Amino acid sequence: MRRISVVSAALALVLAGTAACSSSSGHSSSGGSGTAAAFDPKTCQGGTLEVLNQDSISKLDPARIYTSGGGNIPSLLFRTLTTRNREPGQDGTKPAPDLATDLGTPSDNAQTWTYHLKDGIFFEDGTPITSADIKYGIERSFAPELPGGAPYLRDWLVNAANYQGPYKDPDGIAAIETPDPKTIIFHLRKPEGDFPLLATATQFAPVPKAKDTGVDYDKHPISSGPYMVASYEKNKTLDLVRNPHWSAATDPLRYACPDKIDVTSGLDPAVINQRIATGTGQDANAVTTDTTIGPDQLAQLNSNPALAKRVAHGEFPATTYIAFDTKVKPFDDIRVREAISYAINRTTAVNAAGGTAVAGASTTFLPPQKALGYQPYDYFPAGATGNPAKAKELLAQAGYPNGLTVTLAHQSDDANNFGPKVATAVQDALKAAGITVNLNPIDDNRYTDVTGKPSTEPGMSLQYWGADWPSGAPFLIPIFDGREIISSGGNFNLAQLNDPSVNAEIDAINAITDPAQAQARWGALDAKLGQQALTVPLFYEKDVSLFGKNVKNAVPDGWRGQYDLARVSVK
Image 1 (cartoon, helix red, strand yellow):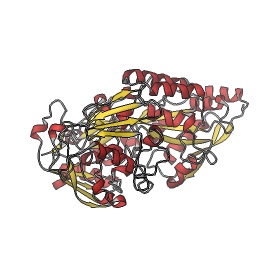
Image 2 (cartoon, one colour; image 1 turned 135 degrees about the vertical axis):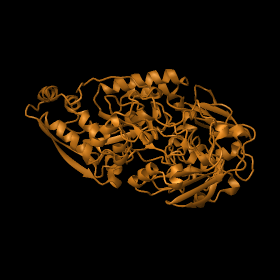
Image 3 (cartoon, one colour; image 1 turned 180 degrees about the vertical axis):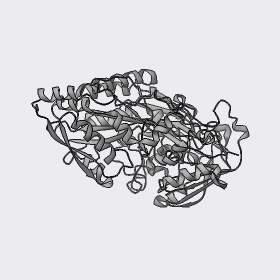
Image 4 (tube, helix red, strand yellow; image 1 turned 90 degrees about the horizontal axis):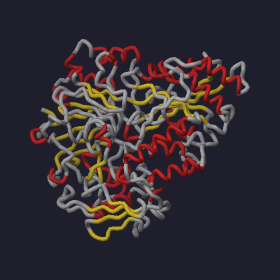
């Protein structure tokens, strides 16, 4: 899950006049100098692309990289069964074939998925990629020695929950069959219509068993993508050069324009933005995949048209919200939860997050993106600044005519937008409704552990959720499926909702392989859940990023809200 950076609310207003390209409807767009329609990948070859990031590169092993981890750098090294469609806006929310010839063939009510591999696909050493390499790569991701990857297959595959990886169990996962070098078959324990979306995860990157060095594979993973590792200093630098055995003929979605890509991580966000804005030397060829535009640059946009043209606008599907533990008083009373929903002031919450340039007010749990199944609703209309009168009325009905006192847990740091600034905005809004909010800051490193364990979970807390792929499933299932409640820790169903009708509807939607039908059902389910006031959605994420003077085709897609490093070019 990716999180947006905080910028000055006052300076964010400066951007409002130049943010016409920014979307409030969930359709990502770009203020960049190029568009996909006018861009010709045949003429983009050469040069060195500089990537300046604040997040450190701590792992390169595809088994240990989470679906959304590492920005889009892993996609330069690893091909998977399917990939992002890599198109601007909502077209980019769709999966597309990558190593596979198509999106897979479902059977047995979407419990079996069959894929066939393309011809002419090779590792960086010229060895052909086979179905056995993909199976082995997946099995490695189950090894306790290689933690950190996406957890879905452990739950989805038949009898795979307790598998401990090929180092302890070389017999592998029986639910993955490879009847020949070009075919791989997955047997699932329940229908999963989103399987082609999951198959974009780095778990599905092929790994040659003969080259596997276990925990040391991270130092130089074998590339199946357009670039391979030239040098890597953990948490500092990563230098990539062309993979001579990659073929554009089998991989038309990755343009692979630059000859080299040099990544520097661990940088201060202000330094990143200043370097890209100034564009001296190689910084003219620079981009960032994890840093939003800074206050200094925001202040320049109205007076610097050239800089304004180097701003890309996208939206990563993510929501910041108030979570309730409905097992804890007074939040076990829906009238109290409704009162807080009415009392909230989303204008001050958005401003605390950085303003309308980087956050959009939201009354729905699903962000406003078609691919998720978004349907607008507002059951507790608070307007732009809250409805304290309606909140007081509901509190009186719940037995609190003189108001009440509650505690709001939040992260101790503001970097992730559920820290002191947003918490204070909530506190001020609820005060007008007679609700006294005591703030409980929790250290960022402990926050998920404390809030994600039912025995220590606060009654009310600020939370954030971002989708692993653009569908309602990874957005709603972890938060509202009663079977996802984990008492030992790592729980995201903070409402501790276990409604058989909700669980059954989730199962029914998971069996749907038509995205349009699934989207409609996910949106309807979100609307049904919204009536219960289990959360108070505050705002959804917008991404506003700079790119260098010499960078072309910096066009974000709807999957991540970022421009794709596999498609950008430099002069």
